View (cartoon, rainbow, N blue to C red):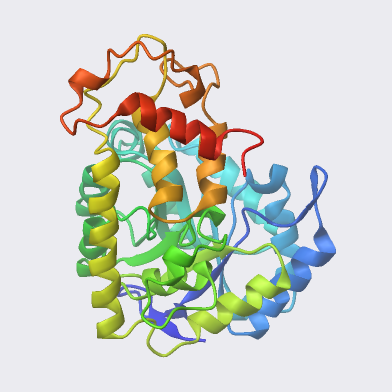
Length: 373
């Protein structure tokens, strides 16, 4: 296992972390025996960072992590999250105290303000009597070691929160398909913050086989997940990538990938960058997402449908593409699938790319609709 500096905090953590958001389930409950076996195997292979949160796995993730930590607590960094960040110090502290009991630990190494935005930080968290004040008090008492935040807002908001200088680390999204946070990763790294990446395999979306993605690395690779993880770990600003793993085989593969001394060579990095730019160019030939064609008078989400199709056509990610397509039509305005097109023709004159939208929507439904192969 490779280990990296956790910002300027004076510690080293494993390049791979164990993400406990998607533990194996049996019905509505976590498969405890399998989950603990997987976590222990990851620890044995050198993983020393585990990430959980109170809502994960129907509220059972922290309980299972607590059991898995027995005998390992002094060797492993524990990360969890508090979502009561728009509330005063009392409720925020009460949640922390409950988590300490649930996890059966005396302290939490990396304690996150869960999924915050700039507005939440500016209007609530940073104000007197609110979450940041409570976090500093808890840190002074030795209940948490480092104050962190997890993030799903815009890249611009990310940099603003980083520049506020209130946090020691950040957990954020970053992968082959979503590189929007690259500037924020660089900014956090420059300021000495630890940077933990969630979703390095796109929440499992990059786990399915794709010859196109596997070919991004010259000479190929064993799996799509390997390419995705190596890409994230090749970013010098990344301290650790946390991956949710469904079985022991995934644990073994990801640990082997994170044990490479150099995730990607200079030549491999350059080749991937060049091919990603080419794939972006190809995707934009089909649709740039400019939204000039919207709103569709019949409620079809034209750019969204084309985005799903690009995941198949450009990246070869069939399961992801079909999953995205099945999400359309969930009672949201202008969010119907391609099959809802009635060929009215209002969209095509508006498209600056002169895309034959009607024909492309038909192709999308043929490729991604139910029953298609």
